[in-house]
Length: 459
Image (cartoon, rainbow, N blue to C red; front, side):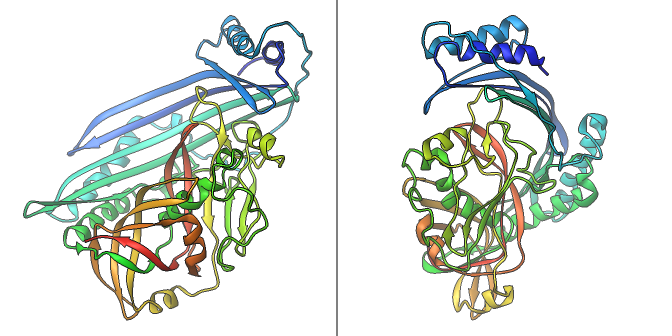
């Protein structure tokens, strides 16, 4: 992507005014995005993002510049600009790079660039038409097909020089059901860190039908009652509760500056002893997986909480300096225009000791959250608020009528202690996570869990 001799020159220029570390990040990504609305293709977008970011450290202070001008002159100008922000002077430093082969855990069978756009469009059309055909009350269907092929190169003044390539594919369908002036929605958006072979295992028709059926369920549902109750949260995207309420509080981005409820708690019992939580960027084909992160550090399987005890944080290079702890391969960014920060990859609660049927049977009265939606969290306090996309009342150990409009409200520290039953059907769901380094693909996951008490917002 960039010749080794030029990389060394860029790094030398970047630290010439007093920086103690410099890094060059180069990227080229080709993305295809197809949008289908109201029975027809609305837009097809092919996009190439290419550029370079250069970062310099002075202790725990960082300086960053980026450019889309990848000529030698443009890159040297970018390096000089970030060096100029650091200080003045010309302390030449010889940089020797040692390119290191990267072990590829994510073999791709069908690269997106080798597949005609028409074939991709047909996959999306099949999903959308299947959603429309579920019921005459489905009034609107929209869908998105997405694939990305991203190549990166990272080099730094410690001699590191690594390249990686990551392919991702996703299909997302939204459906609206309408009757008597009422409209309710449903959504399903699976994805994977694979090529077009993703659709060998995932049926577009099934994706569309699932979104439509969720919309129909919500159309006939009554509003959820409000109050404090026991809640069972299903597997897959239910893991967004841990991701948002607790995961962000375990990122060095907040921990390293003391802006986290989990700062200073390593080795402490912070959760129910049944709970083990993991962030694992090594999972083959995972939506949030990669071989090396955007700082060139190999992905790892990082046990965050083990049997309720806080074991680790998610630590990028800057967080490592602040905390004095090793990097865990989680430095991520949306693209070269962003400085990397510590981010989650594939984050999940591991299978527990409880049988799924016992979890539901244990609830005399409560809520079964079959599908979670989005929400918000404050990492400093851990306070969160999440929507339930599809929920049901539980009575006497049985899942009963559907309800809508439910929200789960609480704090991360409380929910970790109140998760008192953990099932054995671990599954993940895919999403995009936004933070200071942009939007990145992340997996969330868990088995069925029980929260013994939590505030449920409703009517």
